[in-house]
Length: 285
Ligand code: AMP
Image (cartoon, rainbow, N blue to C red; front, side, top):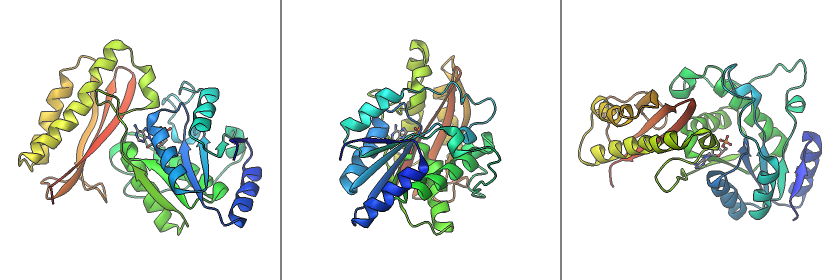
């Protein structure tokens, strides 16, 4: 199939019915555009698994707080479209914000409890915006499988919970974090970093690797691991830690003493750029 652009939800849904009528499966990759290898890994996986691959490109205004840079979020539609073409996606869905949230829009999806911690604690309303737009995307595209990245781990946990709680007929697949050569997690926001900041951003993954190493060497106390991680990041003049937490991988509650598995999640500001990353630490079985 030739890559096709849809701007309207209604015409895309019509197309989706047609695809399904022919017994074909649909894979959805929701993105905010400015695509990189992280996004590509999701698209490639969708291409492998499903017959019709839909990539949505939509910078979702309702998941940004008032000072969170919605307007300045990087955009390059032409480049994104040609990358989708290169990966043999079938459909790009890139609606206008006014079409997704027309005047008097009033309905939001709120996943409770697991959104109170980590990024949910520092970005009130963020996951309400994410859950709402993903619900709309699911309703519009009716995917068999939807693909999300482990980089935004809490987002993936929230979407899984939402899909389960609301009986959504979709499988959620979470794909591993794609990193730059020096370990920095790929992100559309990395373009904001100047050279000095880009160098200092390496400390984020370094600290996560240290957590893994400490755990592998027998350390089980979260507080001690976090303190050592903090030291790595605090050495950087441009870095400011928003949080470093060690939590249960399912309910995202703080874990004081790690047993066999936990998520080490962090958000660090490098200059004016908010960067997110995590690793799962696990005993070898
Ligand atoms: P975004 O455009 O940042 O909203 O991301 C769209 C999807 O791509 C989300 O499910 C992200 O978790 C995923 N993603 C972003 N960066 C990466 C990465 N470095 N590796 C894997 N997945 C990623």
